[in-house]
Length: 99
Image 1 (cartoon, rainbow, N blue to C red):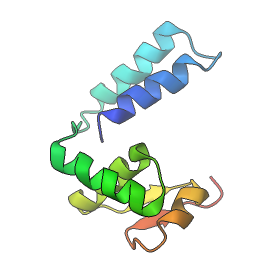
Image 2: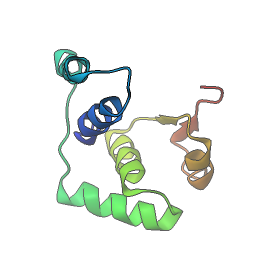
Image 3: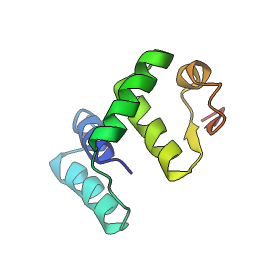
Image 4: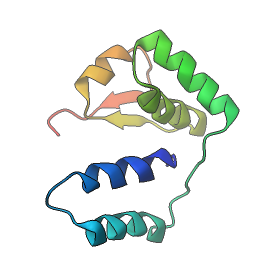
C-alpha cells in the first residue's frame, strides 16, 4: 500500500466523532501489525501519477493508487463510480458496485 493510506486513514478517523485519539492510533498501528508492504513515493511513480491525473481529470491521490496497482501488476478495485467512469479505459481498474 502507498504510505499515503496511513495519512488518509488517520485523518479521516481523526475527524470522525466516533473515534478518539487512542482509536486512531490503534487503527494505524493495526496496519503496521498486518505486515503490509508500505511503499513510499519515488520520483517515477509520482511523475506517472501526475500524468495520469491530468490525462483523466482525477486527483493525484487517486492516480497514485492506480499507478502503483498498474506497476505491481494488480487489479485496482474502486467503489468510487465517478473515478471508475473517468478511467474506464484502463482495463485493470474494476468497480465494486453497491459498496
